[in-house]
Picture (cartoon, rainbow, N blue to C red):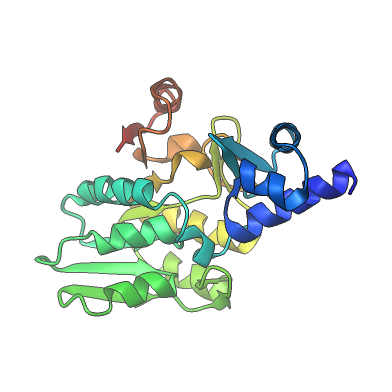
Length: 253
């Protein structure tokens, strides 16, 4: 197997499984662990994966986006901490936009059940998770359903959003960087996120540490757009400080 083919196989495995382990890859590919580590370094240099201790995970890029099923298996304890911290920012909001994705879904599930709340979302998974909350009214945005994320997009979705005045929007992204702002691979998804921000009085970005420094195809907001960024302590404090200099409060849970 050529080096190029081996590295393609590594990327394919990472995208299918959500992460890869150096030892398992060495056995699977019939090469030494150091060869795998060298491959991972090269793939990271090309922006295709991000290395971790003993392995790596795929980076979402212009041509690749993980499905919701995969997202529900990655960094789950971290995402739960982020969701709990983000839910504390609800304050006196009565209408809330909850973006597509697993972390925003966890935020919605962390909302208090002892007060009236209207949640606007394009995510079928989030709408389903709130369906039995007696004091929560769920407004599910219509549109074209994307099978990988189970969320709606296109002009039906953005038109509905444009008709609302929302107190607080919880926004996710495939990547956030100081240079490129917040990005996502799909233009239709980017427009829904951008419209949610335009419709909201306050906007908060929520995302795991793996989102930072990554950039996808479509830019939909600047870092300075947000009141707060909620991530985890896995984002170094020095990096959090750099983002805070652009305007938002950075909360590390």
